[in-house]
Image (cartoon, helix red, strand yellow):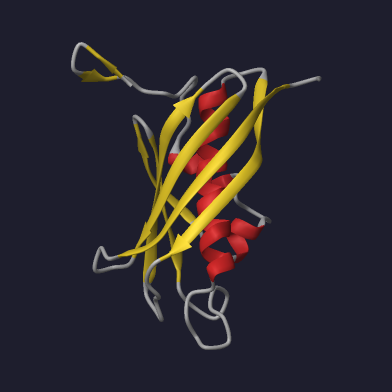
Length: 148
């Protein structure tokens, strides 16, 4: 979002990396080793290891692990951007797997494309340690009111 050439934050309230990472305890995210590493004005960045938890039988990063990583980053970001009294749930996600990884740490960056009253759209890109693009994902979220 831009006003007079300056970036404005999309976040409706402040949250820390510590709070985000604590929210991952006892979830799929923790099981797969996901960690949120940065909060930007327009999204979140995190990491996930390529190891026995996240590879398929050919020892390549599992496409499902990449999609789970993308949806997790986008969902966390969407819920912070939705504001108090609202929450977000996934409506649709797609992913294009453009390169494989066999080891190391992958980094995902969820960036807001659209923040609306009833929907949000997020672009999530996952790169390897050499900054090569592995996966491009688009996540659409429905914004709901608590109690409805």
